[in-house]
Image (cartoon, rainbow, N blue to C red):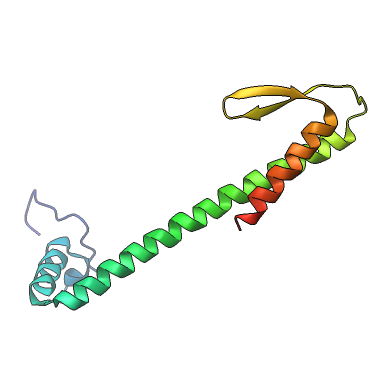
Length: 125
């Protein structure tokens, strides 16, 4: 290394070892990647398979996230049902959200609506 110049990311374990320099040198790694990219020929069919694989992998990820959201919704509905069953006051009006609006129902009506929502959410699995 020259005076006043330092190469980042170079670790020299042995001053006589070029292998250590090549392994950690970012410029050599970039050159190797460029050379590897130039040597690769991908057929149209292979590219179609790669694209299909990427689409399927993306869709699987989206579905897994959607399943987690539905599981959380189902758990929230089950928790709400348990809370309503534990409520002591039978004449209590309970607000139930439908879209952006809250509608007050009796405890029995709210319990029935929650059960229907649980069945619907559970059927999506």
